[in-house]
Amino acid sequence: MAYDKFTVLTSTAVPLPTENVDTDQIIPARFLKATERAGFGDNLFRDWRYDVEGNPKKDFVLNDPTYSGKILVAGKNFGSGSSREHAVWAIYDYGFRCVVSSFFADIFKNNCLNIGVLPVTVSPEFADKLLAAIEAEPSTEIEVNLPEQKITLLSTGEFESFDINEYKKSNMQNGFDDIDYLLNMSTEIDAFAADR
Image (cartoon, rainbow, N blue to C red; front, top):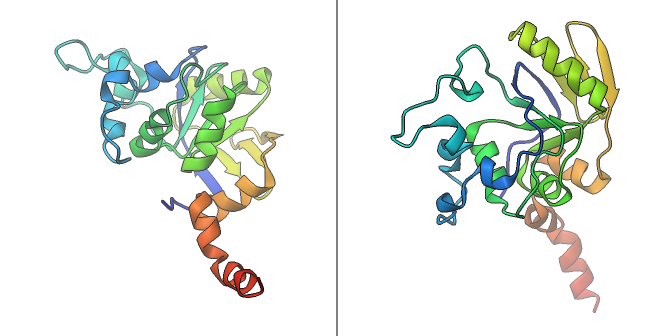
């Protein structure tokens, strides 16, 4: 399933400085029954966003209209726990296109790259700068430049470079998942098969 192309994203951001956020907190297990990707955003951080009666908790950041944007700046060790790709489906379906953290769980990071959410790993010091800037001024914008592999805090010009696998980088720039990548090579595959 193709997703939005990702080249340069300039957006405000939502701060979530909590460390060790696992995939069950991102999308609780009771919401994993669906097999289509749509609708998971409604239950992103469900138990943090809503009380037992389904009322929004005013003190949770996603319920605070002060913060918005397509970038989630998270605490260290984001996406630990089970390997459920539904966690990334929920993040994508909610509207986030990039998650920034000083450390990601490996499986979660790979799921992000397969689903169209760019995981950007920065130093703990730069993550703290981003969080402090957003909390001080919610209209702060961040630029994530995938071709240059650079993330910039636009209010100060401070930036860091980030790493990404070249194959996944190309796929994200084209809006491809692994199947789209192969389908895009159908002419070459047909030519190879005809030669055999």
